[in-house]
Length: 620
Image 1 (cartoon, rainbow, N blue to C red):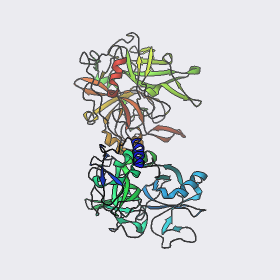
Image 2: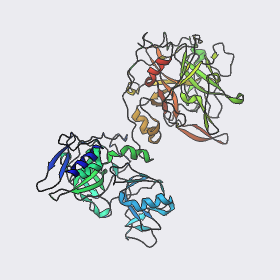
Image 3: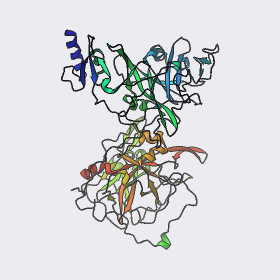
Image 4: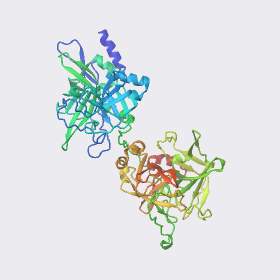
């Protein structure tokens, strides 16, 4: 009785209770047994299906999980088998390949892990994979356990995955890129939610290495029962277990056939096994989804489609429009004189690759920002969008500079705003208005040190109505319809700006380009590595015309406006994009890469912040 009370106290530390009124477990007695068993109820923890972005099969890695053998017991034929071996010792570690750069190994690998942690010597670590060796171990060290030494593959990292219980460790090894072959491929990570697991011996098998693979029968959640001893270690995590009848192997694999193609998925990692009073051995494995986000964050070539959260509530403006008479082009254009000069070839023009010379007065909300630094250094580096008499929306990253290992922020008396500008060389243009803002409001969520470009938005505020509205100076409207990306992903937006030409010469005339707004999925699939990290749905979105037109270096902060019902509405702020290196004038320069979409801060996510801080824009 005392032991049971102690166990209950221990379990309560994990938020459980082993009293009869427990909401998570039901107590059962096995006939002839002297221990109480607790079984999870049907409300098993549900993991949502991971989204790897792949439209057809939602695979974690292209080409993963294909194994020609129909019999899991076929010796040494699983193409994801890997051995990590210490060259100078007898230590070996068997694991499973999940990408071109990652291997998971179980807690039985402690000797190998400790050796690597102690020495951090990658040259001591050998990686074996494939099944092309006939000998168990060759004298020249090229083969081990019928696996071939993977030449030039080095361990570059090791992490212990989040513990499931105090006595269970799994390790994630990262390597340089492994070249695949027919007998060397990664297994797929499970790609569906866990609400409809198939409780059939035809779909699951347990494996650790080679001929240890055996079919496994999966218990239903309500039949997954454990003693109080195991509950002490697991806490609420016990609702994430998958229980199978013996055999108990380290890796639980799910085999699925769809559209004639059979693939194998890593479904769970074994933690422990127990024996019921009836003598039946129960193997308990933790759902791979328990670690999925952690694994993805550690493996460079595994990427999840960014989650799309709900949009914020739409702001209604008091006067209907965000500012009276906003978004109108007032200039009368003489088409015979002001017709745009088309480029004869696609060329990078700063933020506007493949753009045209804008017609005079067709972007009257565009602001040019000039930064006056120390020692008289002047930089025309960013743009912005006028949204009222007293405010300009731009990008937060424009106001920071990294010098001497530290980040310096520009002050309002260092930032000159010019409106009504068209020809950069004609400084005496009558249409120009130049002044300094009274305040620079950088969004509190922006962090220039991390360079993630989250919350990349800022406001320039004037204490009085310095701006005179003319044909050449007009505010754009703030977006006032559906905030979701689906409402604009089929539309085009206009971006204006100044930038450098292909010859690294700055354009003198305002450039304008029309860009296609992409869905979040299309954006992610275009370049998973970059957009998997920097695309933050609702915070930003993608737009461009790959290999034809894009935004790039030179005019961050400029606005993307959408034309609707005779007005131009601000929806995006130029934020970031993918760069490349090119040789210009015999020098290696970092330039824009028009092959890919660019990222724009989504103004609608910050509409409440804008309305709260701009004096002459009011919501209802």
